[in-house]
Length: 227
Image 1: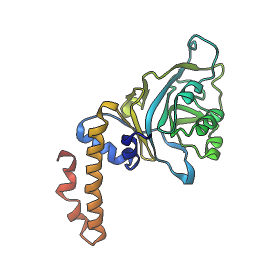
Image 2 (image 1 turned 60 degrees about the vertical axis):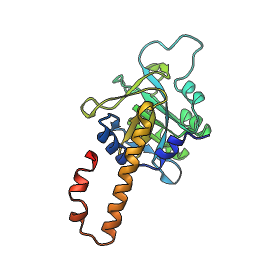
Image 3 (image 1 turned 90 degrees about the vertical axis):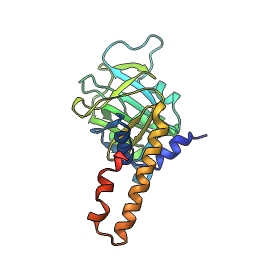
Image 4 (image 1 turned 45 degrees about the horizontal axis):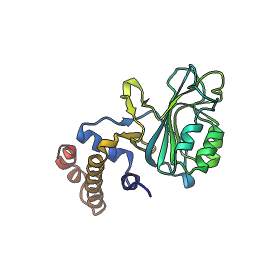
């Protein structure tokens, strides 16, 4: 059964939730991870809970060899977003075509990768939503390994604000931004965002009815996040 918080989050957009985070004094808005492939019908918005994966140079965890990403895919489902950190500075894919197919077969909501995405045309063909820092043709093999699954990961550039994502945190992504919401804060963030959306809907209705935009977007709009 779908988490009701995810159902509510899917009805919101990144800007409304970003405003809610500002209102509550919380971090979480991440830019610089553009949409690389959309879902069916060109839909870009995804929402779900984080299944995390960290990738970089080094030695893989002990045990039988496994290709990076397989564990995360096997642990995730339709209410989940796989969140990948590959911030090593090496140009090496942290997600690729066969992983995309595997995630699509499990109906995973999407992928957010702070690192290079490989096989983007395959992802577009599969209509599977992926946000990533960059694109590459270079394989992970011989360059980076999976360092851990369901561990804390980091998203975002230093100058734009970095956000730590814990397994089970909530994410919303659309063409404006990727939003991370700590699991402990989800209720009050949703309430604040829904209030903001309702106020902006009323303002849009007034503009459509002919009220001058300066009157509509006066003091109430400028101070909306303080109320």
